[in-house]
Length: 501
Image 1: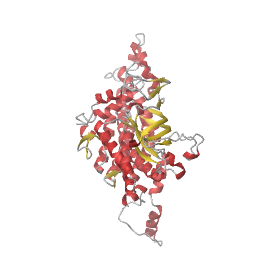
Image 2: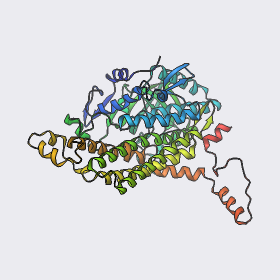
Image 3: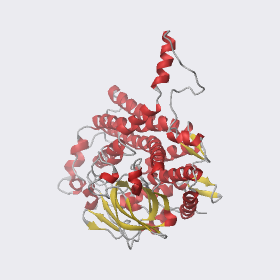
Image 4: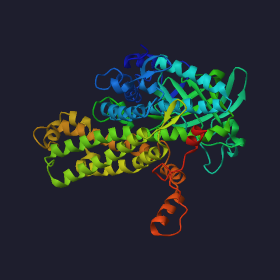
């Protein structure tokens, strides 16, 4: 069996010899023991545990046609709409175990994106890329590799194309091509879970022009590669993790993002899946963004479940759980949560077949993500209202443990007698870290593209002319409408056009 356990994953990432990883200016030797990164590692580990836990293994495993045996779903190529729906359900499920982003989804979506993109390229005569990728995919599935996906470049001046930038490598750029491989320089920003991964899949972040062909590159390399440097970013209340407690810093599970720097890094040619093929970069971005936007319906709904549960319990601790306005607020939070989830499921079950793989419905995937840009902030506002001002002003764990203060805090922080002051502090900190954290608030807005990116896709995919002709016909105005079988007034995406051809 090729499925790894969580413990095997921890052992695999505990030693680095080439890559340089920095946290708050200091280099990290073992990410599994570093107090800043260990919560991220444990959240990543949950994706391996999910394939073994009785309550999740049916979702956490999938059948590989390449190995003819079960693999971890996070290394799987989607074979049906039901596969895509299982992804969304799994993401919600794991969120209940960790209360944080578990960071493996970008690599998962990158695998599926490259499988389809290289298949399309093969149909256009570039068969070498797909052959290489299938060999790489087989390696990933056999070894159950922990992948990070790296798409977002540093970008520099946003109004300039890659080849126009003052610093030519603010987008990852191919410096040199040899018979054995390529050399690349540049940086990828906000890369989720990268220090906890084993390999990085690098994708272009935008559609390229012919002048940008040196930036139209996709490849995979081990994280522990000479010239790779990772600068882990700061997050809300992150310094609490260094305090050594078990309440304030939420030290069990969390997530991180990092700036990944490629300092003239060598990539073997058998790990290169796009090289100068600028005309396929737009298709790749469209495929990836839809996959990743679909998944948000699962993980953000799962985090919302944790947040709703925390707020509900704090209301109970305060003795107000039966108040009608509390019930109304919780019900509204449930409505917002299930709307995000329903959109993700719809994007899955209304999927598009591309070759021998399945891609999500692009309209519903973009709708999913746009709901996620809006609803988490509303859910946070609702649950903050329920929790009260203590959410931002609670005494510290260390005040609670101070013998001079403990008796006072135990008395004045307690609500209903069924719960202790420590119970209230623990639940308050959980709600603070989940609802106000990067994974729920900031990532919901900017992850998988900003809100404007989804709105652009809506306008591209929705056929306003068709809808107008339908309306004109019903209004008794001359109309040229020609009804088609598809009930939705949607145009085909570029990927759907390619799939048909």
